[in-house]
Structures are given as structure tokens and as C-alpha cells.
Image (cartoon, rainbow, N blue to C red; front, side, top):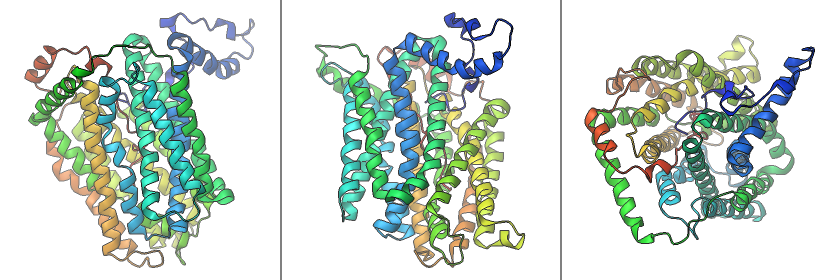
Length: 510
């Protein structure tokens, strides 16, 4: 979403004065147990208020897509895929790194999904058919991965990519619903963002906590079988979603709408005030090489490594998601008003330095200080994810400030795609680095060097900080000519364009 995960979590359970919700009935007449009752019943009242104001099917859609599909399902899929590639397909760490990048390609073309949901209704509906398509892709692809005994690697990648496309399409479609409801119910915009953020965070925390247990009990293919449930729920959202029917849609205007949106985005992107920060954002992400697969193989297979079990891996990732949530809260409450360039300097520097914890672990320096592997990795993951989130949040805010009036959603989707290309570049670059240094399933002698090179490259974007404006988040960045030009255009259709989020990608790869 344009409003990031950290937006106004305090609205959860608050009194909603704008909607005249009376919470006095939650309080005992004598004031006894007031705090406990409000804590327990406040979220229920809040959910009921959102459901009554915007229809229960919308609230269900947000919880299913963000909480169950992306949060819980995404966590299960991440851990399950790690073990699927290592134990079932038996690929090398560098290969697994490349394949992880391939499966993320559907997220790069999110602007296409967003434009389709806005300008190309199917049978008179803009959102419902895309939920049905997303759910169908997920169910079919996960079933094929689960039931096929000896699935060829190419077919496995095809089904993993199809499943990723299903999640991406559902994400874009629910974002479009949130954008529409934010326009029709502006006083509830923050509540909707809080619902999205909380659903995603809680789902990821629960998913990572149980992922290792399920991988241990039923194996990675069994986990794929479980993932048909979130996909089936997305399909159900497409059936029950309350959406007006629009018959006799002028399909002959679709090509013109695509052309107008593309022309407006290109005009904006050519401005130095826009492409310079975009170049920094891409470089910052692309140079933060992702060698997570090498670390994962070392965690589980190295003779002199910690030899973590599936349960340990899942729990470590769950603690990392808590660190990411703490980073979002820290940014919201302390750092959100700091100038972009100053904040990005310190977060980028700390991001590079935090990678040294991996180096200490691989060189076994923690054992010299009598720090157990498990405790050290939990601290490492928490710190890395927290700083990664602190680094990511200002980039999201900066992206939202670069979006001109009238094409906010579409242009934000384009910026997020640029960032996703950066993440893909980091994944493939990390895979190439592991291959060059001959880090394999059984050979980890040069893993420390890969970590050192990655950490140095993480700091290198500091040399490009001059591309980022000195402005603070409360000031305008776009030049006047772009703002005035966009204000003169017809924005009626663009107002419904989806506002895209990177919830699954906010936790930057290590």
C-alpha cells in the first residue's frame, strides 16, 4: 500500500469518533475490569464497525489476502521452498538463489495486473474475476507440487512462479479495493491500512512459528498441499465479494486508457526529480546482494555449522518478523519526520554493519565468546530484519512522494516494480557470487568471503546519496510543472487505480 505497514497501528481498538461508535457499553458501571474488557472486546467492535461501514466481504478479503495468503501462506511457502529446493530438487545454493529470483518475476509486472483490474472488467466485474483467477492459479500450482512424486525442476519452477503470480494478482486486486474504499470512506483510510498491516504481520508471525513444525511432520511437499487452503480462500473471496455489476462496458476504449496511463508515467519518469531518486532506490536494493540460500544451506548442512532443525529455522524466521515489526513501529514513532537523505545515510550504513553478524557466525567467533549458535542467530535475524525495515520504510515514503496527482496508484506500482527489479538483481547477483566462490551444498570455505563482499556492497550506495533530495517527508518533491500538468488531466479513472504494497518484500533479503 502507499501508506506503509507502520501507519497508525494505534487505531486498532480505538474509539472511532468519526463513526460515532459508542464504546461505553464495554465499561463496567463501577469501572472494574475496564481495561481488560476494552482490550478483549475493542478489536471485535472495531472489526464489526469496518464490516458494517464497508461490507463484511471487504474485511474478509483483506484478512484472507494479507493475513492468510501473504502472511501465513507466504511464511509457510518460504520455509517449505527452502527445503524443497535443498532436499527434494537437490540443487546447489547458487542455483536456488537464481530460481528464487525467477519465481518473483510476477511481482515485477504488478503495474500490468493493476491496470488490468482497473481498465479491463470481465463480465461486468472489475475485481471478482481477478480474485477467482488468483485463487485458481494458487490451487492448481500447489496441488501439482504436492502430489507429483518426481516433478522435473523446470515444471516445479513453472508451478512455483504460477503460485507467486496468484498471490501477486490477489495482492493487487485487494489493494485496488482498499484504494476505492479509501476514497469513498476517507475517515476510515487509516483503519484500513491498520487492518492490512496487522493482518500481514500477525499472519507472518504465526506462519513462521508453525512452518518448521509442518515441514518436519509432513515435508515440504505436504506444506504445498496445505497452501491450497489459502488459495482456495482467495477463490472464495472472488465469489462472495460485494461489487457492483457494470454491463455494456466500452471495451473499445481499453487500448486508449492503457496508452494514456503509459504516456503520463513516462512524462513523469523523465523528470530529474523523479529518475534520480529512482536510480538510488534501484542501486540500493541491487547492491545489497542476497546470499540467503548460501546461509540457509550452511545453517542446516555444514559439518561445522549449527545444524538447525526445521523447527529451529521456522522459529528463527518468526523472530525476524517480530524484528521487522519493531522496525516499522520505531520508524512511525521516532524517525518518520527526519529528512530522507540523513535517514537513508544512517540506515544504509547500519544495514551494511549488521551483516557483520553473519560473518562472526560463519567464522564461529560467537563460540569464542561462549554465545550459543541458536541465541546468536536469533539476535542476528532480529537485528537484520529491524534495520532492513528501517532502511525500507523511507524508500516507500519517498516513492509515494514521487507520485503525481491523477496517476498515484499506477505510478506507485511502477516504482514498486523498479524496486522489485532491484531485489531480483540482488538475488541473481548473490547467486552468481556464490557460484564464483564455489559455495556448494557441501563446500562452505568461501562463504565468509561472500558475506564480506556483500557487506561492502551494502555500504557502497552511500556514494549515490546525492541523488536523493534533502527534503523531509512533509514537503513536496515533484516540480511545479509536473503537478500543474497532472492537475489538468482527467483523473476520474485513475482515482480507482490500485495502491501497491511490497509486504512480502519489505523484509529485505539478507
